[in-house]
Length: 115
Length: 113
Image (cartoon, rainbow over all chains, first blue to last red; front, side, top):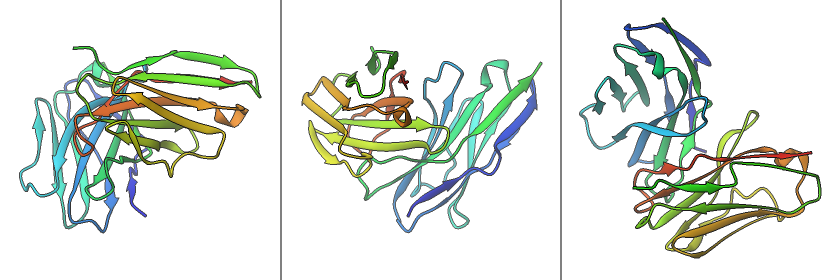
């Protein structure tokens, strides 16, 4: 079975600092996509970043970037210049190419940002 | 553009009652997904549709759950009869095609007493 593991239930960062959230996944598929979603207290699931496994270049979206290590099956999220609005639950997810569109989620990391 | 729309946002019902959750996907999206979020099990896929046809319902917990998509702009998830263990947040998501990025609705928080 495909699994996604987020080993950090909680993380904390000082405003304006950088924080990295960890994610590992287990798949036998050769093609897949990886995602980070953010869930603030409003509970809305918001896409943060997407990575295609066949691309070697790490995805970047403004202050958010990933470190994708395919051989190690690792997909960490780096948030630079952290802002108070970044406080939320962050979910890592995989989407195996041959399982339709199914997203497999990790358990989440709750990020708090200290002013 | 309007995102995925779900109704109601909150639902409180008593055990044994029928519950119907509704979803309107983003216009032009061909794939629709229903997820459930609980503390114990996290986020899990219940069922998904492609071009209004159910493709994979292996995540539906039991026969009390059913889902329909009568047209491209509307889907329902029904629980009959409801039980307290069905209490959760139910999300609907849609994507252009099944392997494209999924965009989530605001969720329906269901409480079964």
